[in-house]
Image (tube, rainbow, N blue to C red):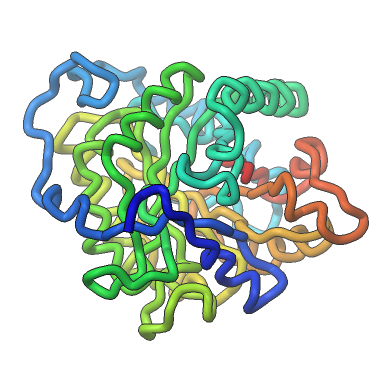
Length: 353
C-alpha cells in the first residue's frame, strides 16, 4: 500500500480499556522499506549535516556534589527510602536531573497520534516553546530541555509482509524530525512500538541515529505483544530483560562513540506492563525514566502514578499529559505544571501528546 494511506486501527487499546495512551492513528505501508538498513552503523564522526554524527566533543565534567543535591531535591522530601534511587554516577554531559525534559510526542504521518504531527511545524515548535516557559515558571530552579519524541516504529493493524504488525518509518522522516529539533533547540527521542517483533530486532536498526549525542530512545510496552496477540487487543509487556537489553545496547553506543549519557524512556500505566523491575540494571552511560503514560481525569492519573511509578523505583520518573484525552471526563481538566509538581518524586521528564 502507499505511504499516503492512513489506518484508523491504532485506536487499538482504547477499545479494550478506558485508560490507555491513545495512539489513534498509524500509517499503512510495507514493512520492508527499512529492512536494508539492518547493518547500518556509523563508523566515523563527521560534522557535516544535521543527520550525521557530530565530531567528538568534550562534555562538561560531572559535579558529583551538584548531582547528589539535585537527586535529593528531585525526591521531593520522600522519607520511605525509595527515592532518590541509589545508582552509579552518570557520565559527563548528563542531562538528568540537572534539567527537566519537556517533549512533544507523535508522528509526522498522523495528526491523531500526538501534537508532534498535529500542527504545522512552525506552530508546533512555537507551542512547545510556550510549554517550556510554563515549566520554567513553575519550577525556576530546574532548567528545561525541549524535546521531540518521535514514534519511529509504529504498531499497526496490517501484519505486513513479515506478519509483525509494525511499520518502520522511513529514515527521511527521521531526518525531518532532526531538522525540526534543531530549529527548536530540542533533543530527539526515537520511540518503538514493536508489536509482534521485539526490541532486540528493532533497536539496532536505529543505531546511526542513536550514535548522535542529541538522540535518545523510548520503548513502549503497551504494544509489545509477546503472546502473539494483535496490537490493541490487550496491553503488552516488557520484562527487565528487555529493558536491560536496550540499556546495555545504548551504553555500548555511548562508549563506542564517546557520547554523553543516553536517556531511555519506558512507558508505563499498569503493573504488568513492566515485570521484574528490581532486576533492571543501571549504567553510568544510560539514564532510565519510567514514564506514567496513561490518560484520564486528574484523580485517575494521580492514582496511576502513585500505584505503578512511585512504589517501583528504577531511576527517574516521567509524566504524560494529553491535550485532548485528559479532557474527556469531568472535571475536563489537564493537569498544570504546578499540579504535576505536587507528586513524589518530581517527574523529570514531561511528555505532551
